Structure formats: structure tokens, C-alpha cells
Length: 508
Image (cartoon, rainbow, N blue to C red; front, top):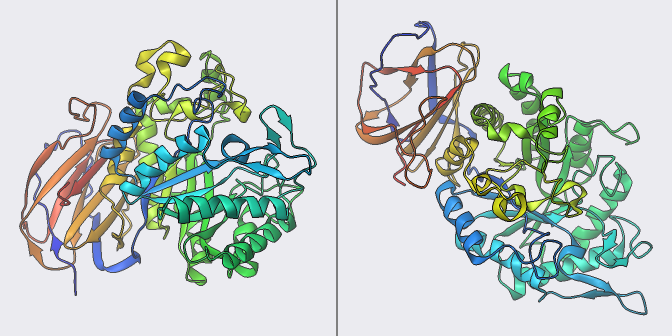
């Protein structure tokens, strides 16, 4: 059945807007790019430095802190959460005299993780779960020599026991996908870019999941690579890791997944979509979904590293633009290009500064500042204001909330205005349209939908440097509400420079 199509009649001042009457963008709601979209979301770790009395910082994640996080996520409504952990942070407590691992699935650290998973389970969030890499260091004990790498049977066996506990014993059906090693093509990974080690580990894990009756409950995600990075000692380039995964490992992988820490020029020019749509097609050819497990912007720019040095609590692995309004526009821009390129979701890196430190050594002066806030701003930085919501929460939360799970991302004509991009999604007669103007000029375009037209209530949100209305909690509220009206088959949309505008008829 053809979806119900909607037209808006909106009235704005013409002052300061560039006339582009020839630019008519059409949304084709019956031409689907991606069906059953998983959704957008975040990377969320279970606070390894503050998760128990024995943690480096102590048990700082109090019930009050968790409630603050949950309340903010209640508004965002993420539908994809990537949870990466480490055996020796949670359940691997050492080795006995025979060299066998000592596992404790009821440790305080595992119970902290369960608070996070309980939230995801309750809210029907798809969780991409996994471990950063092969265990290399146990708290208080050297584990070198116990595991040889991603293809070590001992580690694979441990992973399966843990998953059996979480899925079958605890009932976490939200755990849908599993990552074996973070960014395995990187020199920084436990695999150091070794394709053979990683791919053999994937095959071993798939076999073990099958033998233990778990393969129908949780599937392996991969290759989890930084696609724009080519490791000189690796057998394949970053993109070739994806291609070879589809060729050699498709029987073992349930979903394809990549990362990007891209540059601003690539996104602002619109060329990000050109590069990454080709990567998406690799997964489409084998009829599997593909997602971004991490998305963010390059931290190693000269300007960013200068800003890092002015913050006594920031490590070099920080993106200081999270404090800036502009980061919310850039992240909205890249999300729109991701959705239009055929991906099924994207998780922003990351939720909270309090989750990680450089090398995860627990140094309070080397936080990874990437979050929407710092939940431990008072305790770590003596700065309660650091716990406040940062600007980019506004745009990213809207892109999570109003592109819900199961929405169909539909085709729209390219907009021939520099810096302007649009994405639309429809589900059960409701529609969301998001437009970003990442250029320096105010712009205007004609928007047309290709079918039947009805009246329907809508909400309009705007995220700009001067206008982004919020409620008492700092959550976005509509700039305008009303009814969508037929107006000659198309509507005129005016978009301020450096802004996001969203129209939605979803009633939540």
C-alpha cells in the first residue's frame, strides 16, 4: 500500500535568504533506500573507572548519576547502542594454578554493566556488544602468555560462556550483535591489523556460538574497521577489509559494521556520501545490513589539539568541538549522508566523558572528551557545569528520536544548493523530514512529495546558533506546531545558514 503523503504550507520572512526557485526537491515515499531502519544511537560504556568500590575512582556512579543519564536518554530514544567492554574489567578475575581463567559473572562490575543492559532491554534498544580486544592485563596480575590473540580458543570459550550467562541466564534479548576486537585493522588494535588472526577468530566464534545454541540469538558484526584508515602492515586496506569480509566471512557475519572519524571538508562538501555509499553497496550485494558502530570527526587537527592543551582534564584523544554549536550541525550532516547512503543506523562516539581515559588507565587528567556531557564533572573536574548537556545533544537526539526503529528511509532528489542536504523516513503513515544547511548562506528551496495529500498535525524543530528552544531540562521543544496544509503541490522551505530543521508527524 502506498504510504500517506503529506505537504506542508509554511510561512517565513524572506529577508536574508538566497532565492533558488529552480531547486525543487522531491521526496519519493514509495522508493525505499533502506527498509526497517535499526535507528541511530550512541556508544555507551559501563564506566570502567567508576563501576565498583575497587575501581580506580571508586564507586562514583551513584543512583543519582544513573537517573540523570537515563532521563536524558529517555528523551533521545536511541535505538542502537554499542557497548564495548573488556574481560578483565568485568568477569575475568585472574587464573588458577593450572592457568585456567577465573570467571565471576556476579561481580560488582558485571552488576554495573547490567544497569546499562537493563535500560536497553526495557527500551527495546538494539545492542552491539563486544570486547575491545584479547585480554592483555588483569587488574593486579599480568596475563601475558595466557592468550595468544583473537583466535585463541581460551578467549573464544570465555566469550561464549559470558554470552550464555547474559542471554540465557539473565534474559538480555537486546544483545543482537557481537564485535570481536575493536577496529582490528588498526595498529592500535590487539590484532595490529592481522587479517588472518581476526578472521580465524570470527570463524571460531561463529562455530562456538552454533555449538552452544546461541547463533540464532546473537550474530557477529564485522569487520568493525576504520574504513578510511589503511594500515601499511595489514594485508588489506580499510575498504578491502569490508570487501574481503563479504567475500570470505559472509556465512559468519550477521551484519556489517564500520567506523569513521572523518574530516569536516569531506562532510561539508557532500563527498562523504559518495565515498561511503560505495562501501554500503558491498553489504547490499550480499543482502546484509550495514551500520556505523562509531561516527565522529577527526581529533588530530591542529586547532583541536591546541584546544586539548588548554583543558587540564582532556587527553589528546578528545574532540573539543563537542562544546561547540557547530559540532551539532556537522554531526547532523554526516548522519543525513549516512542514512541516504543505505546504512541501517549510526552510533555516535560517544555518550559521556566519564566513560574512558587515555589507554583506559584511569588518569583523571586524561579524559576522552567526546561526550554529550561529563557525568562526573563534579567529582573528577570539580566543575558541576561539565555535567550539563552540550549543544550537539540537541541535533543528535532529534535524529535518534524521530527516525525510530522500523522506519523506511526513502529516496529524495539531490538538492542543488551547496551545503544543503535532506533525508526523509516514513512509517505507518507518519513522516520525518530532516534538512541541514551546512553552508554560510541562508537558503530557500521548494519541497514536493509525490502522492496523496492530507492534513495532519506536525512539529517543527530548529537547531541554529541563535534559535534552539528547550524545556526546563534542556531538551529540544518544537519551534512550531500545527497542521500540514496542501499548498499547490509543494512547499517553500527556508533554512538558515549552519542549521538543522526537522519536520515530523510522529506523535511522541
